[in-house]
Length: 262
Image (cartoon, rainbow, N blue to C red; front, side, top):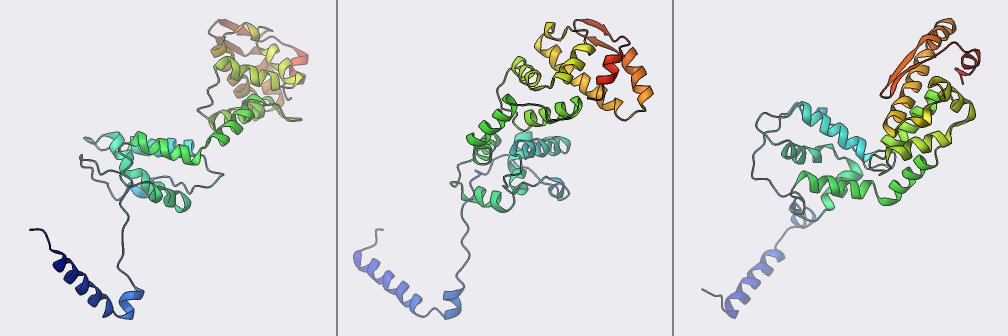
């Protein structure tokens, strides 16, 4: 039955009277109001084991943190402890909020209520917030304008280049461009070492082979730095690299040994 204007007026009057007699304690300590979650509760049930939450990585929303690295570490934990019958995406959707702290948690709580339905939705919003376009462009410039530092060894240079690539997995560069950027940024002594290692045939490789060979040279030189000089000189003179295009044999070469530590 629809309320008459008189009934509505009477109800309002009772509310005013109740407010009038509220104590100072009630007025200064209002009841807690919870904002609705941005995540739509899934229909599928998932039991979260208490031991799992402390194992999750944390993300605070700081500029020094890498959102992609956080997601990868988070997914690794979820993949390791996935419950038998539960969907992995449901598990990620339920657990991810536990990883957010401080600024990142405030951001999550500020999202529009019931706007996130899937793990894909949450992941996209997270990356849009904490890995904005200007940050992507800056990291892409680090890759495309990469250059060796003065007195930097080959393996140190390669490790630094791979760190730049891994910091921006959505860089969008083809493999041949990644090889080209690194090659152009190498010092002349590094190029000499590289060409000596593959018999002057580096530019004949396809992009995947070239990328693999760069990684190999860096690994081989890095291992050599931890060995006595005589031992790595002997290994350099006899080491072979079995690339996809065939076998490349290293020959004894005094110049190569002189440049190996560059």
